[in-house]
Length: 421
Image (tube, rainbow, N blue to C red; front, side, top):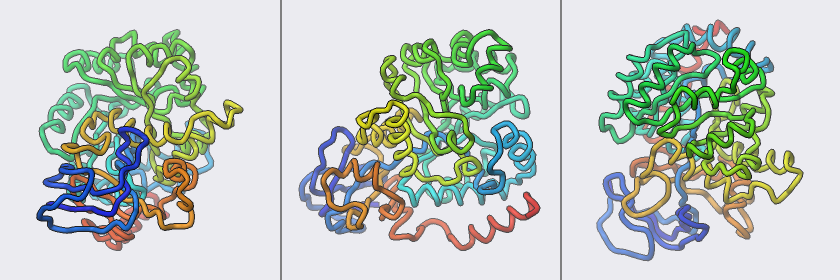
């Protein structure tokens, strides 16, 4: 499909400059950015001065956990996880994972999110839910003591890196505290074999770090490094309770720190020290929503505001964590953390994954600084369109590849069966 978007403001995220002109797509790629250019198109869209920017990348989530939204709230992390989440997840069917994944992906689209870094189960139906909608996703291995094998992770790695343009896979495991050393060593060996990055939940709570020190005498990050997991990159989700040595390892290994501020606040896990990490030389940052069971909203605008606001208050410095840096984390940073090197910025030849932002809303006016408006004032109401692989999946409140009412009906029916409510 060939699309022409004209009369547009375009923030490519290659720099802070906003271009006024056109963006064209051809067969899932961006074919032109700049001034007026003739051609034949399947559709031409007058954006009337609205903004195109790279789609947000949800760099850590568990999409199908939408079924636990507002079900297991106001509990400490361990009670939430072991008494509510794990028991109910054990009742998930393939149909349920399919429906709840589509529900989560729909919410992503309303927030201008064009890809997710998803750690979950029943991957064949999860992948089908995404490909049926046309949603781009990166799968993250989720092995732990409760399920999965190292051999199974290797099979997934090869299966889901087989050429489908919407699907890719990164090595990963759930967390140190849910995964015995034998499995950790097996995962380290896989990383070495494939020279592949490794991802996991890391230092989310004080108790997690304390427990690791009791078991091994060192922090989770230091353990992973000692086992040889981090030689080929990767990163950690949450990274709230890092010490100086952890930060040095992330700096020296060029690892990605994926912050999840809403989830960390709601579960009282803490605030990741992003500014201190930057001072220690860490450079790679991205943003995730985490799952709807712990957030409960899959909204990148909320996450961006929290990233900026929490750093300012923790640093006691209103200049800390400026808006453009946060916007870069939510777009370019997330793409690179996920291995989506062709989805990081808007440029000719890159993937046509982007959002159209309605600037003709009160919260976007006046246009002193569009990047700051997005981070400090933006909301889902401003997402006019979400495009993935050159296809419009969401436009003016409507989904083009899924029947919303059908998904809602099925999701509520399945939730009652699983949760007994």
